[in-house]
Length: 182
Image (cartoon, rainbow, N blue to C red; front, side, top):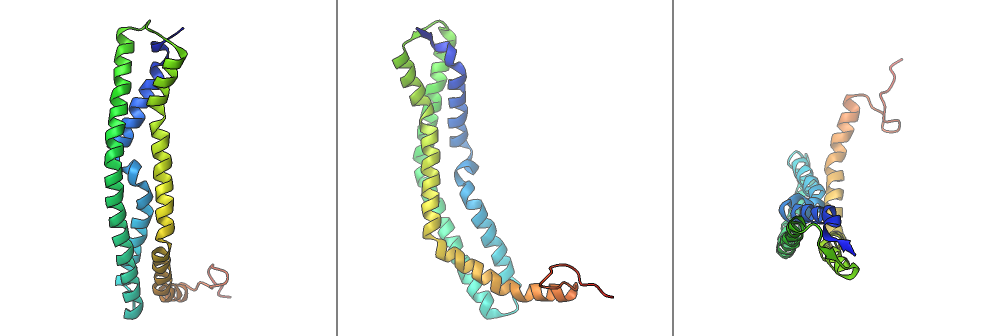
């Protein structure tokens, strides 16, 4: 027969993981950071564009991408509110087990009971991580066109700027290094 206190570290990890997921929004919205950065940089490039038609296309693409990001944030918030509540519940459950284990360190637990306790305290976090990943991957596929439009607009707006930069600093477009002046 095993003792409950032999598995305290597992329950401590469960408390930390579940509270971390519930309280740190960066863990839930990490997948949006690169898109927000791309939209912000493209928006700044559109403001400095020489050709107003290119800037207009890039601005509309950036606005669409920002709208899709806002919609996604709302979706994430709605889904993760439920996940947060469940994570807090699992963390509290794990903490109660730790308290019981501290009060009764020699409490015997059967293999079946221990398996159920470990499954209930460790299974939700990997499941939430997989669900978050799959959901984000599917969402990224659904907005691929808007993201490609921003990339095309970015290239169109930045093309003349790069040419001027190359001319100003004597860079050869083939070698990407400074040209020699012999």
